[in-house]
Length: 146
Image (tube, rainbow, N blue to C red):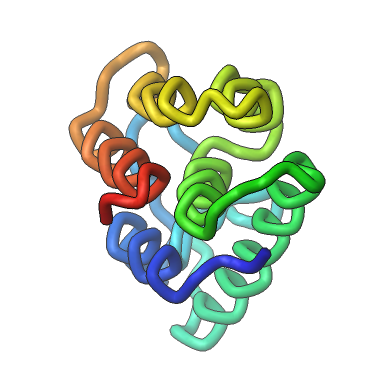
């Protein structure tokens, strides 16, 4: 599976594109473009729009491939896949790969998996409104309601 244009637009709406590296929250790490982080991202870094778009396309495809590998041949709808890729892009594939959400999805407990999105709305133990909204949107996409 590959991410749908709908989920790409969803993620970009939440991430917003910033062409100068910034700290989204005090407990975060330097971020640039459409939510790009990594060892090569540092404060003071500046990108062009083309660089931001290119890196997002490359990174999002890589996250999608990792999610697909974790899902294996398990039956998954496009909406479920999209929602899980969005979550993994935001929390990392390590967190996603060991999540109860993935475990429930693989056990075909789709209602239980959908409920798990809400658990991923904190950073450093603090609930963030933006993450709460994003997780609600992902859960709706996962359920096929958006």
